[in-house]
Image (cartoon, rainbow, N blue to C red; front, side, top):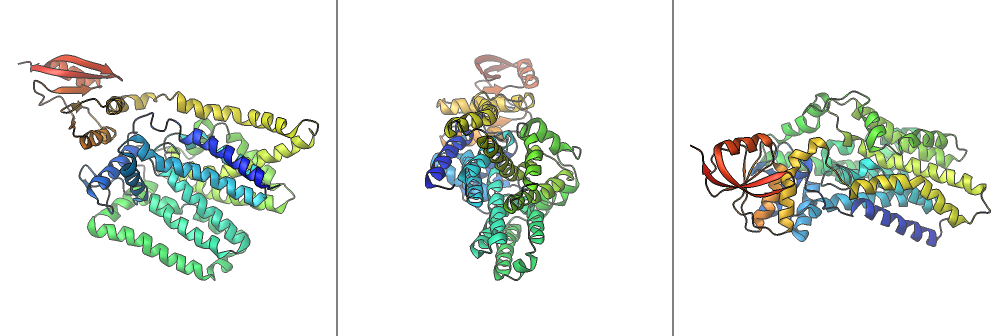
Length: 487
């Protein structure tokens, strides 16, 4: 039954669960190397200099991060109100993840006329490890916002196919445009499943005869084409960068050494990003397809048609990264959530003597205790992976100093390698009137300089060339005061 009490109760509990998954300790770790820090620095430049069309990095148009700037816009606006900090760059992703979970609750609850089904679907997504880890709902990456818009355009199209309501079809086009404005071509990658859905339901002609199809397509071309070609006019070479980073270059070739076998995503889901829920996938789809109720089979085909084509496309890409598979997580969660409710109905039928709410608490505890524990343990006992420790140590130092309002004016960070994760904090200090400098080696230091280092090779170089005094050691970093240079 879909009573107002069940709708309210299930929605509130699910919302509380999502808050613990995506908002608690959102700022506890420093900005991450590569994508998150790059996005954050793009947003800082946009906020401080007002160039809202072309994201910049190190004072020049960013040709490595060539995605459209919807996420960067949201982060810049967030920093305008919340300041330059980790919370501000991550809150757009966290809110997108929370909304996505609640979209599943609303979608499944409305479809099955039972919001407890929706609760279970949302709870599965909120306890999927890959969705709360790097590039999920807790970092300032593109993926959570992308997944929100993909989920919305797929569910909108599903209702358009079933019910023919034009407001759903209009919503499909709006969310499709927003998905592409978030992460470019990736926003289109569930369209093969959408096309198959229309074919199976024999609604291809029905769809193409509708005027919204052509109006939506025209608006899509004008909006997306307008951005890409407009940016090319003021940022020459942008379209070539898009090709290299997002289209043929990244798909056909292996970029940045991210070459993996075809079964990479299968293995990663099984071992880490979807480990607890992985073996539920198969049985939940099988159970869905053998049901007598047509609406359950339709629901299961909807999820499968979105998952399989996308999984196939990304598995044959030349460049593979673990988070590329995240867009299918909501549809896996829908299927598994329905199956959990199916199990509940069977158990309830044989346990009439046990009070319903007692049985429900025990049932939910048995199924969700461990995945909730995994997520909360990851949040509250976060530990850097060995390969991530060294490039983040100075960021921990700077984050701590910023929060404690320490005076680091004039500090020089000597670090050999990628430094975007430090530049975020350097910008935050600069806004507060403190200048911090970056160097790739130990040359050109002078007496009186304060130097922050964490790499052993740099430490050895400094100690060989300079007489120093240790000022502070923290987070694997050493801060030295240079007193003189050895002749």
